[in-house]
Length: 265
Image (cartoon, rainbow, N blue to C red; front, side, top):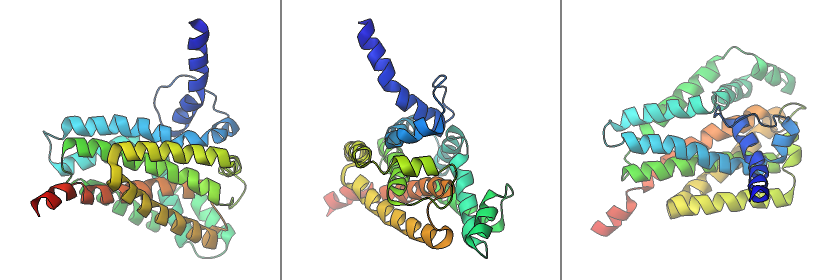
């Protein structure tokens, strides 16, 4: 029994380390070596499932009492807090770097600047407004909100893995170990299998529609990043998380009422 429990504990360590890296959840003192975490990047969709379940459960609990706009506000705040603002900050840095004039080095300098530029502010405002409004579009039920948040979070984390697999490092830095580690075909297949299983179970055809849009956006992000920066950076990975989460929620909220419409006709 003890041996089995020990084996289970060991097998959970990679997931706990990924969660400790991506969130502020109290998952215990884990291995924070960046190369160890990068080696387990294929488990990002599992972290998405955990994050989505926590925030989705909160949204489900308040869905019968609060206006959809307030639900959107609280969900957005919850996601930002639980992920430690890292990906939101990456989104603003990505926008600032994209809009900066000059060479790749000048764009890199703009992304490293701790001050948020006008492009970053504009993108953050659009993102926050979009996240809040999307819940006012109309999910069919509280359960649909719950499953949609899980689906969107899992897809967002998978896109980060996909970009690391398909892209090249823009410059030596925080992103490099992740991009190097995810060139492993077996790990990429594992990440894809985990993502497909969760998305299919949680949201079925609507989830795969959201995934299709996210894959298109991922390809666009990779192209734009290659043209502007020469490859993928940590900020690009973080920005992709926010962008594809929002796009997934937009698709899922739009499609959640389709079965009822079909039945009417």
